[in-house]
Image 1 (cartoon, rainbow, N blue to C red):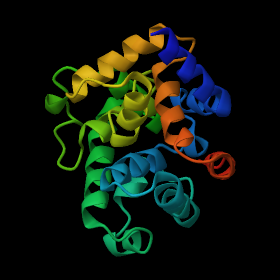
Image 2: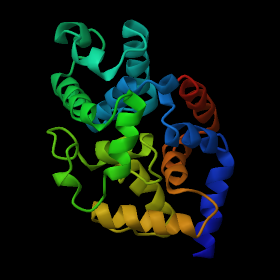
Image 3: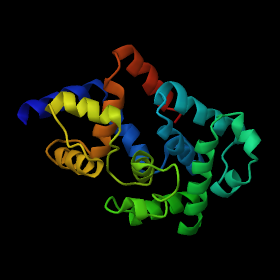
Length: 219
């Protein structure tokens, strides 16, 4: 365990900026606090494309095109206009359904996402009002919880790959893996969300890390 923790520390030293990024995420301040953009982001990740090169630029185009819109305003945008940003019908349907489901959780968009996240749970997530939406898998669900203020982790292939490199093996089932990483975080000086974001950066060389961190300053 000591060797693994030392490896985590060495990885985190490569990306100290992750802590500030995660603080923004936990405060629901991604994309200048625009929850519609956060929902779009989380709905795009299930496609499996490169997050920094493809997904974030697409969400930034969405934000630049439609401005600081609310979830309600997002639901009013014609589908053909959305396709000019991202040509995947399933992604937009997922984003719209998530946005619609959040409307009953508060008055402001930020309040809606944070209220939902605080009431959400990992166990039985498929029965959650967001978890049961078609197109919302465990990664989208966890990502939305993170942006809603919950310190947790996504069990995606990159996170699994990096933790497998560190520990040799990891739990196979998603829920077990998430709880395992959350337990690991308690043995370090880092939050679960920081460990998650760290893995997405350290798979790249230092030049790409610098480039992607600059991209994330806008997101």
